[in-house]
Image (cartoon, rainbow, N blue to C red):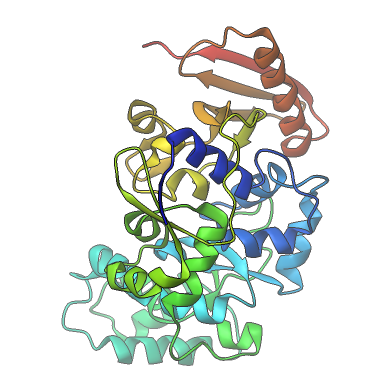
Length: 367
């Protein structure tokens, strides 16, 4: 079947599947699995991403999952830090060898030119076996073996060559510091998949982000050359076309919502995967707004109004107060929406800055 789907319908489909039209009453583990991964370059965004999608979510809900090894934090999708379930990591991490390898080569290819990468990976495994090392400590130990090489590049390379977990408290709310490395097989007690399959990833992506095209899937995952995979899977999928005629795939059982479905104000954290999950992001924001949100390698925290990115936000905290500064791209003229912005902002502050006096300030960016 070949049907046209409007941009607004695609917007509502994405929001519904992300539990942004209404918060879901689900355990945090189920939501992590549904989303496949939560971007986790910094510690706090995964917590905020779950808070905005789940009713009754608390910090302990995710922290507990990290400590009991139900979820793990590591380099996964696009070769970047994510939190994924322990059940998914053994097949998802090997599937990302390509993105991880390209990221390593781009950043450290010159520094490791001529090196036997298998030997480097084996050395990293030997150093990590039976213990946890911070990246600086791993760097120093690798420098003893390769004193003439850039030791920082060696330590970062091991992170891409060897499946490692960043064990808690790293990655828990408010925790920074040196990144710890633990061998994934030892932390999880299982081996990594020898032959991971794209076929396992496609339906998971579509369930959380569809309908979507090949380029969208590649943008979200970091994988390349998936045209043949989608063509092979075509008989198991439903096919749509967007307003431009571009082909989109979806699960045959997935329903498309009414494009008029109301959507409450929502705050998304920095690097939220909904914002970076598509090559064509016009279902979420205009190209002009994208240039304000995605600056270089940064993706700002965003606020959704009527389901679309309409501004950015940040929280400034001191010991006693917390100020949420919301900067809209255009003025909100509807009084109900303006009040909802403040109400949801107060809710965000109660989660992110409990115990402090709160203030929500909404301004409009200068054009």
